[in-house]
Image (tube, rainbow over all chains, first blue to last red; front, side, top):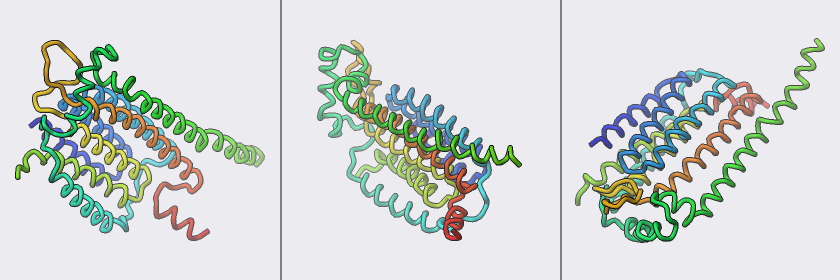
Length: 185
Length: 117
């Protein structure tokens, strides 16, 4: 029941995000959306994910977006969107297809569902002996699927280099000639 | 057929599709990235929902507990959240750069300037 309440809050937040034009409010609503997601993760027993979502999703992303707003503009122009109808149609059709796809999924919380009976019993039963940690999520993340985590750090490294390449040096170079001309005139 | 167990998935699909709608229909680039974020969080929710076992607890082993929720989706989504922030920051950097070059972050105005040039 609490899951549905939180999902209802999330739907209301999304309606706000779509309708509100002030980008500062939109960014704050996005932070709320992530935080509500984190609350749902706690209810669904994914405590590690909830920590990460609250810190990284609701915290760091919001700060990054606020920084972007400071460097660009705060207000969305109120010209009506030309793609509202086509966007709505695409979303509707995709949504119907996805819902059709859920029809033969195992129902929520079903212990017999296939994903609980493949490799996971081994993780839960053997990880105390093989890895020696009580937290199974940590065991899988750092040991059984350690290469995934290594790849993740490569992705973050690449993204950091990308951000530096896009706005770090280029901007300083670009500003310099302008500053000089301003000083000259 | 029992549909009540699938209702959670349907709400999450609705959230996902509103994210997709924001990405397609809104002209503002920051809002598009917000839409991507909404889409992302909804996909994460879908995965975590599949990992839940009725009556289970968080997958941290203790002596008197026998039923645990599935830890595997949790691991996948932990990785995905961090990668998601990396892509968000890259997108926002592009938005800042576009604002420097065009003086606007509205999709249609940028296209107009491109057509004029």
